[in-house]
Length: 481
Image (tube, rainbow, N blue to C red; front, side):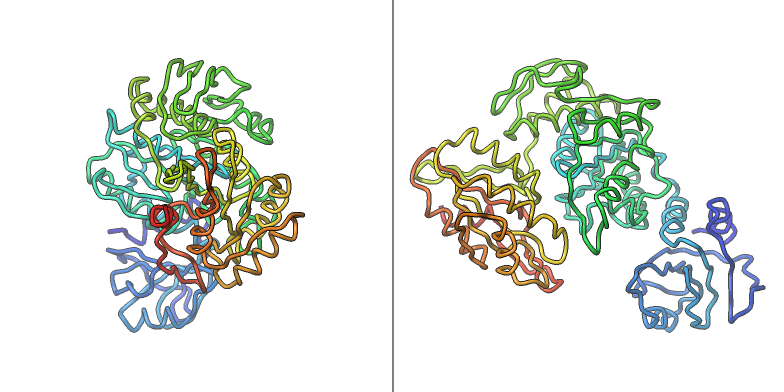
């Protein structure tokens, strides 16, 4: 339960209170009001609900239906004049986050919080952290791939970082289940949409930055994207930063007065010796590590995670065991065809992550490389040019362009846009299953490789704003092997 007096105190301290209006009257007697539920879903609202009006596409009719179902009070940036009192605020997202913290009893103060940001590697690093911390602690995990609030049952999240009301409810569940730590992926959208407003993390990790999520419904510019990524540093008690990332100097200056660790080739915490499934580390994590995920970038993600977990109570033994146990669905999963050729399934879905994936695969596989790739529709449109320009540097690769969450766009039109930046001939097959079947048929020897990039472990295709069931790249590779 939360009282109106508490809500007003929170909003006023945040300079986010405007007024309460009831039927045009500014002198509504609100004393004694209290609420047993908080929600932004009008379908779940009743007389005991504090309802938040959020979203650019919110319609008055949603509120009218909620009023008909018994809703008696709501928070909004606008007075919809639906016959019940409204508490007006300047920023509904800020209000949601701070009120949710209070409503759920400040669960963020009862957990050690670890957050990862970066253009790529967040999910892999979150999995490393979960496996490290579970050695001696009881962590919860909020990840794009999998979420667990009890360490036993897992489910897939719809957002990389949940809406604040959902986030603090999930934290409260984790606390109630006796968990001690919470590992989160924090996207740039989380700060742009203020899903973590007012939240301070014990450790924040900045893995890397490259142009992505730039478009009409995301970030207008790279500067805006980078700025919102860096907000995690301002909202963490200690930070871990990749010294080899682009624009590192900006982040280095930002965190100079904070508790911090740098990792990578330009720091003391680096990789001394690297092999496919093991590496030697220097610095605070000095020692030998086994790892199931190939690629130096995965080894660096492991070091970043180890440094963060060291600050959260993990031992070096925990870190070694956790890294060795970690595998991630859809991240560098490897299958072998009957002819010995390797099939790599990976979530690489932008130019930078694809470049690293190609580099790792071609380091180990010296024969023919076949790449199956698409680009998402109605978002991340800059990726298409990035893919095309990158692939234009690799005429030795057999490229098959196909569907990857085309949404409201034609996958062949997206493929043509990618191909417009490529000077050699590529194949275009709209049906992703057919594209995978064709790719597997093009290998003949042990040194050959098929790369299925973009979808990872996703068991759906986004078409016309709907998640349409899809077997998954790994399952299809198994089927046609």
